[in-house]
Image (cartoon, rainbow, N blue to C red; front, side, top):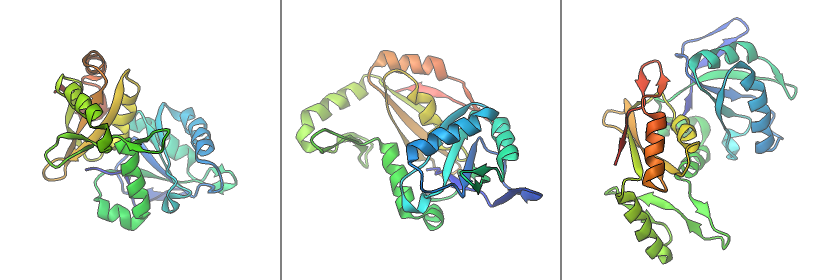
Length: 244
């Protein structure tokens, strides 16, 4: 599965970058003693001046402290922001900005960012929630692809969820290029009514990946398909959605 990683770049102030432009920017040397919610808000305000920002990704993992991913709608706007803000003084520290790439394996990402950062990103994608009683509740994919409930005591509810999934509330997006981060699709579908969660699986060869997008009803899944079918994600890929 494609995981957001970083390019070898020293762009700005006369330096060059060999990485291909990407809608997602990797921002580092951020002031680390700021709450994550405040960091996201300030980054959104700063970067949205150069184009539509779809998402700000920052985790609490110690190895990701002082770093964030900024997801733009297009490569042209991310490039404009990168040119303008490289070296910009943010909370008294100069920003260092690189293009994010999606082709690295999790093993390489763990070596660069640390296991905790990768684990937290995976946990956030799985969208496991915690109930008021403190019990973990959520769905995960078993080896045969069947949806199962984490909390066995909620078995009846799990069966209900599986029945719903069989009634056409899941969309499939196939052949997503590896350079596109899952967060981009999650942000797009997260704005649709009834969105549940998005899970990903790397395709054979590692050049692309597929996504399953779950909704709470067939009507909402149909509406999301109609709204996002053929949306241009990057210069060479349009969303190709299928209702399962």
